[in-house]
Length: 92
Image 1 (cartoon, rainbow, N blue to C red):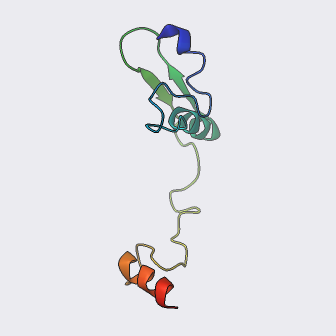
Image 2: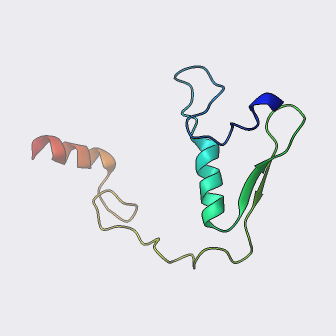
Image 3: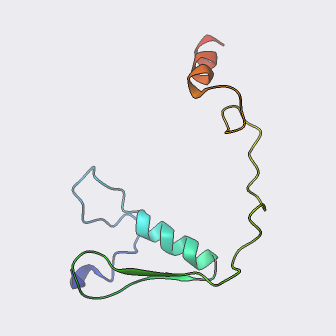
């Protein structure tokens, strides 16, 4: 509804029933867009949500910067299965 448009990007704001949402989705998306030099806006009118996400070309860093797998058990490169990690924790 138009009367809620000013609040939809507030953290923890939701129109869903209790226990059905955190109200963080739109605020986190807007924050991430802003960090990349872009914006997330809501278009007025119509039913449902209509949003525009703008990210400048070349925004951010190289794809490999900061995206290396951490050296922790259970990452995608680990030969151990998540279930095996749980067993270790219970028996150690």
